[in-house]
Length: 396
View (cartoon, rainbow, N blue to C red):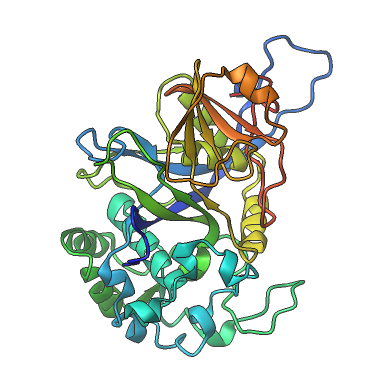
């Protein structure tokens, strides 16, 4: 949709976190190899995160565990959505909270004026529609609101914030509607899988709207330059959504082979044990979520932070003599020209000493990666769980 993107296709993904009925103890995952007297109590997580295993036949990241999401399509920007969202068209960005980040520093996928590209639907809205649609296709989780419950008259200002514009706010965890019969939802899911335009038709006939207000802007990751020119590359909007309960989940048996609900530490533990493979953006963001054992705290943080904006994160691969390093923005070695890969004759130890500012993922092998970050994240975001915090991987 965005012709300004030379190498990437736009995509959207949702990090789905859902509350469990009891707190999951993760003491065994966080135990130190040499126990110390009176150890600090280990946190217990009261929520799990959804990961979907991509098909081994997939052309992009086969067999990887990923968050639900996929490519943005023409239907997500269709003018037909104006009728579905007719109660919200008078509100800026259809009632989404205004982001403080200046447009000139916004990632290009968010800063692009979509009207100039022929779309009446704002980009921030279309990306959320895509994320909701793809989540429905891949997992069967339907993030929609009955139209009569999606009333802009119930909007309120964010508590504690000086707001000058109206925005839809739905504080607390998101609860999915049980208004529709499961067989009806299954029928529509099959139709949407056949043709994404059927998602608009479904919302009309079921009288519902994609719950774009339950998705909080979390990040923006771009696929780095790879060894192959044919490698698929994506410019992906990441959103956070916190659910009141774990919903019924089904893989689509096409792109997705399996689904898995696990706590953030369990995911990292499974990764270290080579039971699941997750890519760097997922590894990084799961590391962020490890800082929040309680879903209510994660929800509050995601909601409050989302209006700050986000940083465009395009990794640059540095090939050292004993490892590869994924350099991230703010790192001392992060180059001005980002659409490249770099080679050096130095080893990791030398490169660490040469870098006062660290924001990197050191890649030893596909299942052994170390995160280093000693800089302050932009836009009031959170550092991921780093190597120093995990006691050199003993917690992971």
